[in-house]
Amino acid sequence: MDKISVIIPCLNEEEAIPIYYEAMKPVMDKMNEVEYELIFVDDGSDDGTLSIMREMSEKDSRCRYLSFSRNFGKEAALYAGLSNATGDYVVVMDVDLQDPVELLPDMYEMIQSQNLDRVAARRVDREGEPLIRSFLSDCFYKFINKISKTEFVKGARDYCMMKRNVVNAVLEMQEYNRFSKGIFQWVGFRTAWLEYHNAERSVGETKWSLKKLALYSLEGIIGFSTSPLSIASIMGIIFCFIAFIMTVFIAVRTLIFGNDVGGWTSLACLILFVGGVQLFCTGIVGGYLSKAYLETKHRPIYILKEESQKHLEKEDTANA
Image (tube, rainbow, N blue to C red; front, side, top):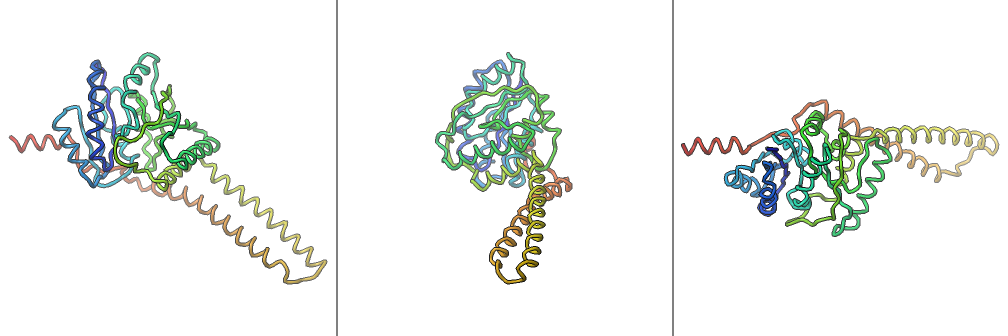
């Protein structure tokens, strides 16, 4: 019997977890030809998320949980889930039901019948989301596909089902600064896309503000393209050339017309503009340098505070 591990990152989702579990139960019962394990990853929640996970693991042996010592981010939660998954197939999905659980049987059927390594989900629309968020998302995919050798599929979600060989390949990429959308694409393998219409959260509000999305997008750009460094170099060459032309122009003008104080306004504007470009290029280099600095520290991607298996063993010992 095949086993499917489902990884569900959670951050302050005490209301969403029971709703998710109730939605998953009919799917798991219907797919009685496979064995399921649900791995909930508590990313340092400060509400009752961990307590709900404990109760579920005691009630249903298919439910496991991992709890971080603090908030390490969704990428760390995904990596922890992949590292602890024991299934022949591994699924990554959100707990808020924006990743429809009804697609799981279709994913399993596709990966079996078409001899695929991964089946991934992508949204064909973003109905119900703010227009500015949709616009910025479209801009991001257009931009990163122009500067990166890795193809990023518009509307792609982390929601996917992978065979064990894909999971092993992803786990080999142990970088501290992670961008799973890029990693899943970079490792390759035979992939099919399952399209669906956007679904709203079951409860609560998204944890992804525009600021967090912008920083996450920057993570993807720095992690999967060195083009910004080339752009900075090109801009430096262009402004060196402009500065040389301006120097020659000023020297000739002075020899012909003499020295005067005219043009100080344009000169001040030019200096400020060039200074801004230099700082911008320095910022680009600093972004890459900071990522390299963090990688050289070799810090763990996450630290576990508690996990279901040890918690249940402790409970059994206490009851005995």
